[in-house]
Length: 143
Image (cartoon, rainbow, N blue to C red; front, side, top):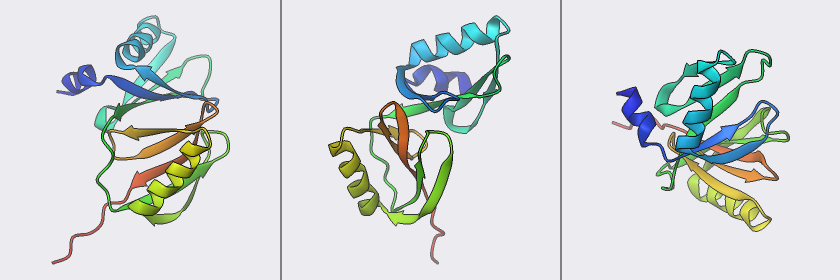
């Protein structure tokens, strides 16, 4: 079943160990990872939700591949995270979906690119780095 999910992904958010982030065609991303692993140049770790991490044998900095979706997340609250270099994240608290949308819109208006992830997260890429990231918060159901 995991392979079916992987073949259905059209785009990946690829974050390199140096913090550079790009949106890559799904077939290209899979081909690059498979080539590197099949030649013994990297190892691959599969994670939940179609995410996978490729770690080069000569560089301990991993490359993370996260499936992208075109649909905005249907979440009421997000955990806000900021970064300066695309890899070191600092959580700043929990915000409502409307507040997260306003912050994303401001950053996009200043030249950023908004990307929705299949995990329900959304991130803004600015100058080839993730600048702002919102991860969904699962609220406990009231009885």
